[in-house]
Length: 99
Image (cartoon, rainbow, N blue to C red; front, side):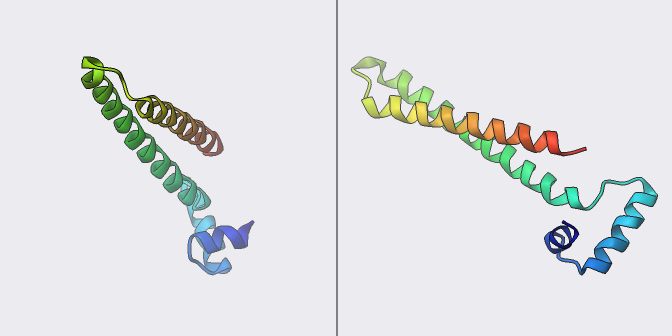
Protein backbone atom coordinates (compact mmCIF):
# COMPACT_ATOMS: atom_id res chain seq x y z
CA UNK A 1 0.00 0.00 0.00
CA UNK A 2 2.77 2.46 0.90
CA UNK A 3 4.67 1.66 -2.31
CA UNK A 4 1.51 2.26 -4.36
CA UNK A 5 0.74 5.51 -2.53
CA UNK A 6 4.32 6.72 -2.95
CA UNK A 7 4.19 5.86 -6.63
CA UNK A 8 0.90 7.73 -6.99
CA UNK A 9 2.55 10.80 -5.50
CA UNK A 10 5.66 10.21 -7.65
CA UNK A 11 7.87 9.98 -4.57
CA UNK A 12 10.37 7.46 -3.29
CA UNK A 13 8.98 5.39 -0.42
CA UNK A 14 11.29 7.11 2.10
CA UNK A 15 10.30 10.57 0.88
CA UNK A 16 6.63 9.60 0.99
CA UNK A 17 6.99 8.29 4.55
CA UNK A 18 8.78 11.47 5.65
CA UNK A 19 6.08 13.60 4.04
CA UNK A 20 3.35 11.53 5.71
CA UNK A 21 4.99 11.99 9.12
CA UNK A 22 5.22 15.76 8.59
CA UNK A 23 1.63 15.95 7.42
CA UNK A 24 0.45 13.95 10.43
CA UNK A 25 2.47 16.17 12.78
CA UNK A 26 0.84 19.26 11.28
CA UNK A 27 -2.63 17.69 11.32
CA UNK A 28 -3.03 18.20 7.56
CA UNK A 29 -4.63 15.98 4.92
CA UNK A 30 -2.66 12.79 4.36
CA UNK A 31 -0.96 12.62 0.95
CA UNK A 32 -2.52 9.28 0.02
CA UNK A 33 -5.85 11.10 -0.26
CA UNK A 34 -4.52 13.60 -2.81
CA UNK A 35 -4.99 11.20 -5.73
CA UNK A 36 -8.44 10.21 -4.46
CA UNK A 37 -9.45 13.87 -4.15
CA UNK A 38 -8.19 14.58 -7.66
CA UNK A 39 -10.19 11.61 -8.96
CA UNK A 40 -13.30 12.83 -7.17
CA UNK A 41 -12.92 16.30 -8.72
CA UNK A 42 -12.60 14.75 -12.18
CA UNK A 43 -15.68 12.56 -11.67
CA UNK A 44 -17.70 15.51 -10.40
CA UNK A 45 -16.65 17.57 -13.44
CA UNK A 46 -17.67 14.70 -15.76
CA UNK A 47 -21.05 14.48 -14.02
CA UNK A 48 -21.58 18.19 -14.62
CA UNK A 49 -20.72 17.77 -18.29
CA UNK A 50 -23.16 14.85 -18.59
CA UNK A 51 -25.90 16.97 -17.00
CA UNK A 52 -25.28 19.68 -19.59
CA UNK A 53 -25.73 17.04 -22.28
CA UNK A 54 -29.07 16.20 -20.69
CA UNK A 55 -30.09 19.85 -20.82
CA UNK A 56 -29.25 19.94 -24.53
CA UNK A 57 -31.28 16.79 -25.07
CA UNK A 58 -34.24 18.35 -23.28
CA UNK A 59 -34.00 21.38 -25.55
CA UNK A 60 -33.89 19.12 -28.63
CA UNK A 61 -36.95 17.25 -27.41
CA UNK A 62 -38.80 20.51 -26.82
CA UNK A 63 -37.90 21.65 -30.33
CA UNK A 64 -39.12 18.36 -31.80
CA UNK A 65 -42.61 18.79 -30.33
CA UNK A 66 -43.69 20.27 -33.64
CA UNK A 67 -43.55 16.75 -35.08
CA UNK A 68 -42.91 13.12 -34.18
CA UNK A 69 -39.92 12.85 -31.79
CA UNK A 70 -37.03 10.86 -33.17
CA UNK A 71 -36.49 7.46 -31.50
CA UNK A 72 -32.77 8.28 -31.20
CA UNK A 73 -33.54 11.20 -28.90
CA UNK A 74 -35.10 8.86 -26.34
CA UNK A 75 -32.12 6.52 -26.53
CA UNK A 76 -29.68 9.41 -26.05
CA UNK A 77 -31.70 10.79 -23.15
CA UNK A 78 -31.75 7.39 -21.42
CA UNK A 79 -28.02 6.92 -22.05
CA UNK A 80 -27.30 10.36 -20.58
CA UNK A 81 -29.43 9.59 -17.52
CA UNK A 82 -27.63 6.25 -16.96
CA UNK A 83 -24.24 7.92 -17.33
CA UNK A 84 -25.09 10.65 -14.85
CA UNK A 85 -26.37 8.06 -12.36
CA UNK A 86 -23.17 6.00 -12.68
CA UNK A 87 -21.02 9.09 -12.22
CA UNK A 88 -23.05 10.14 -9.18
CA UNK A 89 -22.70 6.65 -7.68
CA UNK A 90 -18.94 6.70 -8.29
CA UNK A 91 -18.62 10.18 -6.76
CA UNK A 92 -20.54 9.01 -3.68
CA UNK A 93 -18.24 5.99 -3.34
CA UNK A 94 -15.17 8.21 -3.61
CA UNK A 95 -16.60 10.66 -1.05
CA UNK A 96 -17.14 7.81 1.40
CA UNK A 97 -13.48 6.80 1.12
CA UNK A 98 -12.24 10.27 2.01
CA UNK A 99 -11.83 11.31 5.63
